[in-house]
Amino acid sequence: MTRRKAVQIAGTQAGALQPKGPGVLEKYRPAQRVRLADQLYEQVLQGIVSGEYAEGTRLPSENQLSDAFGVSRPIVREALFRLQVDGLVVARQGSGTYVQRRPSAEFFQHAPAGAVAEVLRFFELRIAVEGEAAFHAAQRRTESDLNRINASNKRLEAVITAGEVGVSEDIDLHETIAQAAHNDLFLETLRHLTTLFDASLRLTRGLSLKKQASRQRLVQDEHAAIVFAISEGNPDSARTAMRHHIDNARIRLVSGNQEP
Image (cartoon, rainbow, N blue to C red):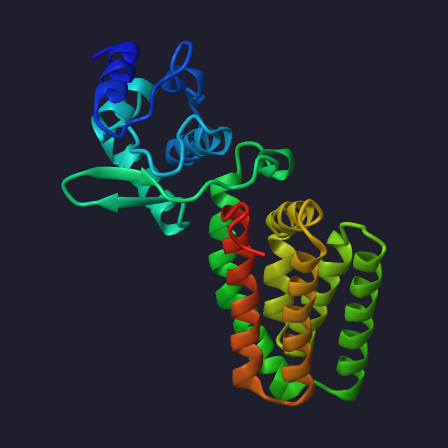
């Protein structure tokens, strides 16, 4: 089956996207790179963000995507699975895969080209690592640690009030909390992955500036909850607050205007 034929079939099926011009599948054909599933993930996401794949419409079938993009069906399945995990699409048994959420139109202005899927996966690692770092920070923090954490949070609050992105200040707060756990591997892990850490925060904070002030206030309230739990020496609450904050950041990325 040719790529154009696949687009035509997809357009004629009930609920499927009506293609425009040369067809969205041809327009977003991915380059051949190491992780083809990540590339396909990003191309389909571009179609969702642009509105080519509208919310509520059905994506082309696995076979059609496979033929259109020139990749194997296992690659297609992996890409679709990640899109489901990130809440962007939903699979309906016996019916197909449907677009569930559309990120904001500014998403790809801040997203790192070619690494979107990896950045979103990074949030899962952050939840695990930073949740435990916050847990131990609440148990082991010293007065000196608390002073550094509070000072870091105040600097972040100041740049947000000034309407700035505050990526370096956000990173500093998270690293200061990891340092307070008094296990060097927490901080070393974050710094070893500094490229992904920076990219994830530039994406989340860059998009936050496009939203209402309530969005930024919500993020700072989440930071405040983490800092309070650590200050109170409540490890379970610190872990929960940190995991909640990072997972919310991931959700806010893909939810467009559906979240405050």
